[in-house]
Length: 146
Image 1: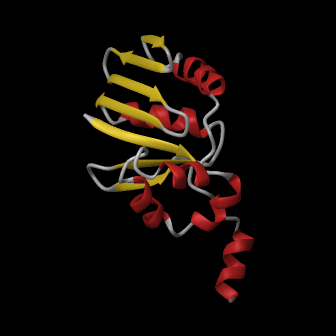
Image 2 (image 1 turned 90 degrees about the horizontal axis):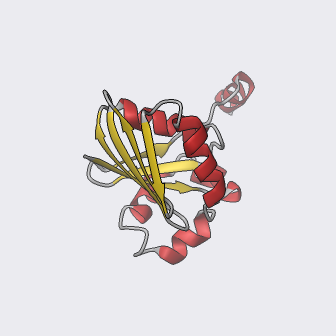
C-alpha cells in the first residue's frame, strides 16, 4: 500500500519553494500534526466542497464505484485497485492499493484544478509537485545568458 500526504502550497510561497522541494519534504515528512503551525503558514486551507466536486466529477468517470462519507472517499476500480482519500483542513491523506495508475488518475484530477499541489510519500522519502511547472523557452534562454 502506498501512502501520500498532499498539500496545497500558498501561491505566494510557490516560487520560493521551487528548487527547495527537499527542504519542504523535510518539514512535511515529520507529519501534519507535528508541524501544524508551519503547515498552516505555507499551505492553503483545503476547500472541501471544491475537492468533493473534483473527486466525484473527475474521478467518477475513471472508477467503477465511489463511496463517500464525512470527507472520506473510497474509490474502487475492478482492475486497477482501490484508493482511500481522507481530507483534513490542510492535508489530503491518500492510500492506494493496486496499480500505480491509481496514483496517476488521482494526481491528474487534482492537478487539473491548480498547479500548487505538493505530494509527500514518507515511506519512500519521495516528494514532488503533482503538476510540474513548465518554463517557456524565453525564461530558459534568459537563465542561460546569466
